[in-house]
Image 1 (cartoon, rainbow, N blue to C red):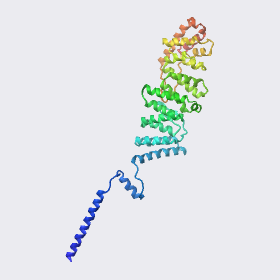
Image 2 (tube, helix red, strand yellow):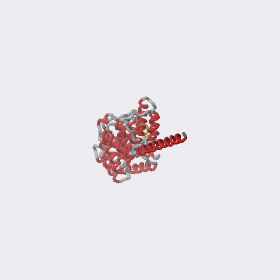
Image 3 (cartoon, rainbow, N blue to C red):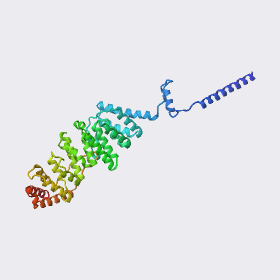
Image 4 (cartoon, rainbow, N blue to C red):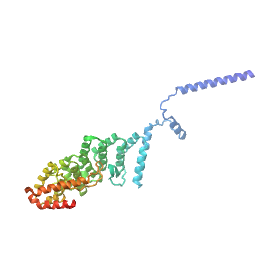
Length: 382
């Protein structure tokens, strides 16, 4: 009996060892491919049985990218549903900044390429230092954000927007992106070229938005005075007073930035501002009369005017033009001046008027000259 029990125990052990070895062999030979997400698969399997023919688990980047895309879509839906757009966009910005930049860029590009959008009801407004205070759409917001996380992607999107030219607001955001991300003279020239393409589009101008008007600032940033031809058409055209004023401010700022070249161009090209003589006179009154070349250009201009014309009267009423506009540009800074600059211009202009007063060539303008000298004396407290 004892012998029989002993044999039974030995047999049991042998069976166990055989089964254990078979199990280890099977485990060793089982494929180990695609185990990167084993823990996730186990967790999902335990919660919800998967069908046998279910496709493989997607890459982690695809999963996370979908979460970011969902966040964008949910934010857009919230805005369209009446939620506070500034609060929604503030939260979305914080969320996007907390994610992997590469995945964020991918999600933004996918959203933009889908053509989807959500209007915020906010104005296209530029704050200090060129940052946008508010933007009118989700797409504009995402294009603006893209410039802060991936310059290359932002410039690629800008090129697409420039070529499509379907939204002036998006175009303006991309002009800002290109201006801040592209360096050197070539970058400025490119921005100026693209800005002029928008401003030359009659269909876009006919339905101009606030973003469209910001393209004038991009022209100022580029600094190419050949743009004066188009800008002068806006000042005197039928594109609306708002665009006319924007064009005027652009010409004025460009004259301040490149005074000698601008004065030469304004005094030599009669077609510029031909229908806006007072505007032209005001710009020419920006000239530095202590500079011999600019003085010669201005003297030729004044002598070409009839002494009883409105243009001549306006020139002598405003010279030296020391009026300055404070404008928040998306690419340009506010023009800075000083007390010494202003008083210096008053002095050089007063001296020039004194010389003209005794110059026979200017005899017909004597009353205008005397009136201008008296005005400057009052300004100087004399």
